Image (cartoon, rainbow over all chains, first blue to last red; front, side, top):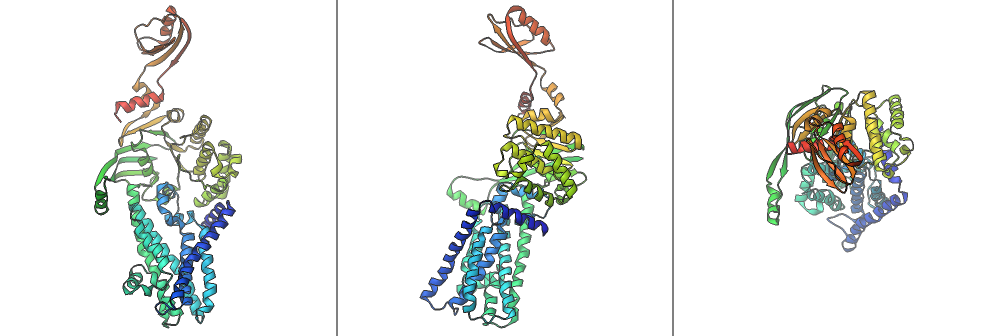
Length: 258
Length: 324
C-alpha cells in the first residue's frame, strides 16, 4: 500500500508537469461527459418516463455508472492501454521486478484527467439526489456507495478480461470494447429497458445489472428486500474468472513472448 | 552460477496471407508455422565472469536473455541461476538480477531521474543505508551529479543510458544482463559505459552477460564469447583463441612515392591505388619486419601501418564460416 502511494505520487507529479494541459484535460472531460447527461435529458423531453422511471431516477442511475466507470478509468488505466504495454516492452520490465504483476500494471499508470467524468457525475448526483424522491436512510446511502465501488470493480474485471485477450491477439479487442464502453453508455438507463434477454445476460454473465439495476430498485423502494442491497458485493465474484483468465493469458505470454 | 542445459524453444508464428477472403478465414482457423528459436542451448557461466553473447539479428540472443530473466518459459531443458529456475521462482530470482534493455527505458519520463531511483529502491525494498551507498558510488562512477535532477525526457541518449545502468544496479544484483547497452551512443559515452562495466565486474564481482553488435564492446570488455546462430551455440571460447582460429593474417597499409614497391612471397595485394598499397600478409611465411624491409628496399615509402584482424572482421568471417 505504501508503495502504491509512492507510485500514485510519481504519476501525479508526472501529470502535473504540464499543469495547463492537465487542467484543460479535466475540463474537457467534464464537458464531454456532459453530452452523456444531456442525451438522457433530451430523451425525457420527448417522453415523460422510460419503462416507469422518471428523469431524476434515471439521472441517479447515470451518475452511478459514470462515477464507477471513471474510477476504473483513473486507477486501472494500465489495463486500458495494456496492448501498448505489451508492444513497447514495458510489460517485460514488470516481469523482471520482484512485485506482483497486476499490482505493477495498476500502479504504473493513472490517468487523473479522467477525474473530469467523476466531477460531472458528482454534479449530476447533486442535482438528482434531492429530486429523485428517494428517502435516504443509512442503508440506502450504504447501497449507493456499494453500487459505485462494486461497479468500479466489475469494470476493472472487464478490463482484466480485455488485457487477457491482448495476450492472445491484437485483433478482436473491439469485441471487449462493446462490453466495456457499451456497458457505460447503455448503463445510463436502468438495464431493464433493453429487454429480458439482455437483462439476464447482464445479471448472470457480465454482472453489470447486479450493481446497477437491482440495487436501484431498492433505492427507489420498488423492491424492499434487503437482499437487493447485497447484490453489488455479489457482482464482485466476476473478478474471479477475470483473474483466472488473466493468469492463463500471462502463462501463454511467457511461453510465446508476443 | 548460471547453468543452461538443452534449452529448446519454438515459437508458433501465425501465417498471414493476403486477400480479404483469406483474412476472414483466418479469423476462424489460422495456419501456424513453427519457428525454432533455440535448439539445445547449453552453457555454464561462473560467478564474476564477463561474457559477450554475440550473433546476428534473429539468432536467438534476446530469447536466451529473456529465458534467463524469467520473462519466457522454454519448452524443454533446464536453466538454473544461483540455484533457482527463473520462470518458476520469478520474484526471488529477479531480486538478484539487474537488466538493461538498451532500447527501452525503465525511467519515468517526466520526473527527475532521482525520483525514479527512489521508486526503484522501494520496489526492490532496498535498505536505506545500502541505497545511499550504492547511489553515491554509482553517481560518482557514472558521473551522474546534475543529471539526477533532470527529467529523463530531457537527457541525451548517452546520459540516459548511464542513468539506466545505475537504475539497474541500485539493488546490488549479483548478475547483470545488458542487452545492447551501447547502441546509438557516441564515442565518449561508449567508453564511459565500458569503463564502468569493467570496474563493476572487477570491484564487485558482478557477473555480466552482454549482448551487442559492437565488437569494440566485446574487445574492451569480455574475455569469453558465446556465439549463437540459428538458435544453436556455435562457439564458446576466449576472444584471443577465436582470433587465432579465424585468421593469422595481418594487413599492411603502405604509402609510397614514385614506383610501386616490389611484392615478394607471402604477401598478397588487395588494393593499389594513388600511391596507397594494401597488402595482406601471412606472418608464418614472412615476418612483419622483413616485409617492411623488403618493401622499403625498392621504393620510397612515406608511411606504413600494420594491423591484425579486428574483432569485427573476425566475427564477419565466423558468420560466413557457419553460414548464419
